[in-house]
Length: 319
Ligand code: PEP
Ligand code: MG
Image 1 (cartoon, rainbow, N blue to C red):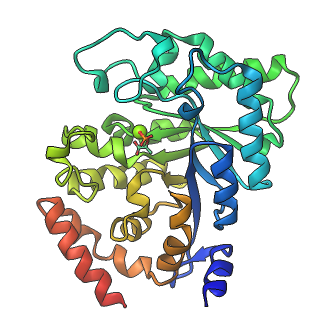
Image 2 (image 1 turned 90 degrees about the vertical axis):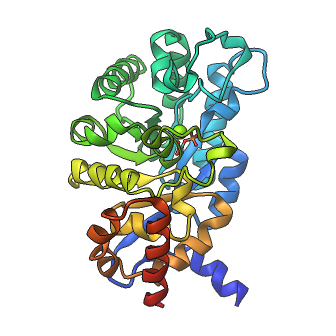
Image 3 (image 1 turned 120 degrees about the horizontal axis):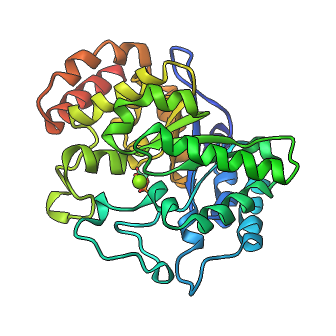
């Protein structure tokens, strides 16, 4: 039986009503990419490249970055690999960057905003990314995007570098939706992006104004808050099928949130490699259309506790 479950993890996950959802892996580097492939991942939905930059005295050079990215692509053997550009600032710091101390780092220069003050970091990372093959499997994702201009600027830079290197192919370029402004303006981002991926950890933090690191708020900072769900719904509506929408925050592996995300119209879930078999199995038991019929009722509830309770009842009824 364990053998059957393992084999099933390598098959696509199709819901009872016939929707095939990509179940990808969140990883920190090439070693985990091999684990992801062995666990049945349909691709990598988030490679957090900052792990390459931590615990060192200086930023990794182009060659060593390229080697790591290439190893991840090779492990996935042609399946899509989303590599997120450096997401530093707020809770994640690098000693050699010497970023100024500010009163609210979570609202400061972090993620894609860093490229204004540290353009050479982006340049080196983009060059390293453009060195991988096959480029068509590579997806580059920008963290903490709050408006389309940020994506446009990186697209221009990427285009110029690719032309300089004489490349005929281009990687896809996408944005994370982690800030309410990005969710509400998803249509303008979808005009510029090849894909969107919702980072529910930060989106929950910024929507509810609850620090994701604060243990006193941990039980209340819940993705199932109707306000967060409405922003996810707005993202899917804004993308309007022009580009795929994924979720790479921890909500993607929450057993109540994941089915609801799919019912809200998300095309891809990215989870820890070990969770892939269980998430695929849960999707195969799900009737997304039936659950979608309950979305208006769920979004009208006053808080996350009520949504969790009602969703638990609805999903138990399905069994
Ligand atoms: C998120 O914010 O949901 C996310 C996936 O990014 P990170 O957890 O690395 O901030
Ligand atoms: Mg984030």
